[in-house]
Image 1 (tube, rainbow, N blue to C red):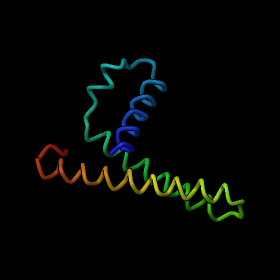
Image 2: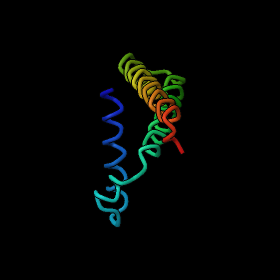
Image 3: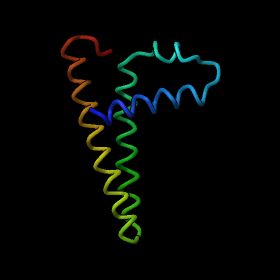
Image 4: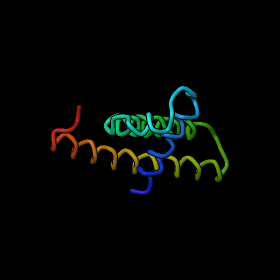
Amino acid sequence: MVYVNTVGFMLLWHETSNNNEKTGKEVAKMNHNEHIKKAIDLAKKLIRLADSGETEEMDDGCILLFCVIRDCAYQIKTQAELEKKAHIKTGIWK
C-alpha cells in the first residue's frame, strides 16, 4: 500500500513539475483511474528496466539494485491491478 501511495505522489509531482500550466487543484481533479493506469504502466517500465539492467555484467551492488527495482515494480503492479479490479467491480472504471 505504501508503494502505491508513493507512486501516486510521484505521478502528481511529475504532472505538476513538467507542466507549469496545470495547478495542483487541476491535477488533483484528474481521474483516479488514470492514476491507476499510470501506476501499472510505470511498474511495467520498471520491470523492463530491471530486466535490461541485469543482462549486462555488473557488480553485486548493481544486481541488488535491479532486484529491488523489480520487487518494488511487482508490488506496485499487483496493488494497482487489485485496485483496478475493485473499480471495475464497482462500475467506476472507464
